[in-house]
Image (tube, rainbow, N blue to C red; front, side, top):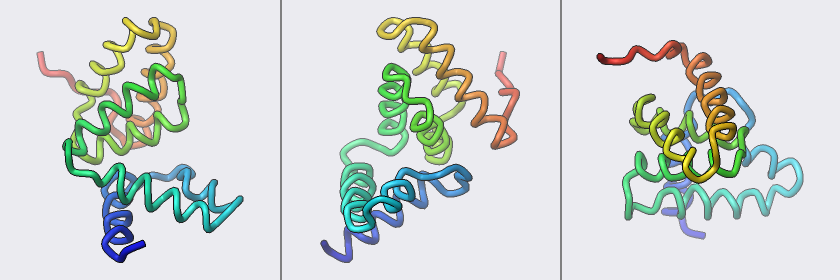
Length: 132
């Protein structure tokens, strides 16, 4: 493991999750196996999420899409937060969720939107002010 990967891991984690008050997956992993947690974090955050082939904003919108369809609400909230941190607008995130109705159905989208609303409330960004 190089110093460069460690630095990318910290930089990316700070970018995505700064201000997040909930438990981060890393903390959960660490409680069970600190060494494996470090390896997961270095790969997922320091290499995968730090990989610069696509911008962070697009990476988070794709992650939000997948987590919406899979109904992974805890992870979804974390990545909605990260998406907002990297510049995704609430309208873009909602649009991605609505697009998933085609693949997962409206009940899944409704669950995702409820999670999104919770995150926005926690960030004092609810209600969303829409341009008309």
